Image (cartoon, rainbow, N blue to C red; front, side, top):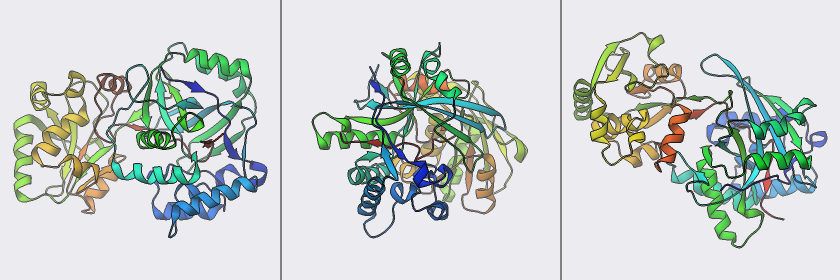
Length: 418
């Protein structure tokens, strides 16, 4: 079973470091150079200086700067362990406003497996090496892993909720308009009740697979027992009404004439196609046959593709579990991306003539400007389907889920030393 504990967190001393809005950042893997520069310019203490370092030896620079912040008491360590309640008020890509509630804790690192911790997506090799080198340099988890647990009664949040009636330790509204609020919960009875509510739960990693696998490698490198055997997580209940999943769309370029013919043949054979407006190209959530929004640069005419027969997906994914055979991203990959277009898993992992878009507007813009030649727009993957596929022991294709909003980096750090 997952082992969840309060942590003696490292965090900014806001009286010295300044406004939290000048210190935090989105996750490193969603930032481009311009965004990083803007964040770095806000404060010499902005977390990007450490989490996304530059220079000839960026990891050495990150280590030195993080050590300086601690020596100068810009970043301080709690004397006693605590859980940290976290609320994110946001407007999703669907236009609806919600509040997602969770809490930060440290979780003992374990091998993936039933009843403990499960992944749900395949990972890329590059980011793991980068994060490992940064972990070695800073000896800390700089960004949290986002994980889900089942708590139908809401007992864990109920234990922590009284602390959220007071003034938060910190609050900030990010560039997406999401309001983040964080409360330190150090009262022993509250933390004990939250731990008891989570006794025996299985954790499902929603976001941060690379960081979790990095933490496992680092723990084995150090060896023995100690704080390095734990990792920083933000835990959210699967039943939380603010938990939503949005799709990440697929784009392809560099398509040869032969591959265009193969794609056209596969669509004609396996799908019913009908024209739709650009405004309706993104399919709505649903659990019926696979539906995909499609557009390419040859005609720029948006279409809705509907799988004619589930047996086609079952045959193409004969070695997969029944849950995976009904996964939109898995079926699209098998029938059209790797099947008709001949992309390999390496092409997808390394973004070779392959890319992603967060929403329909971005996907259409990339087609309009000729950056990609074909776009496949997907439905969101239901949370229960994520759970079902993970429980079957299979990993989804990368970016099968887009849990919005992202967690901020810089709210808390988890030291990997005593």
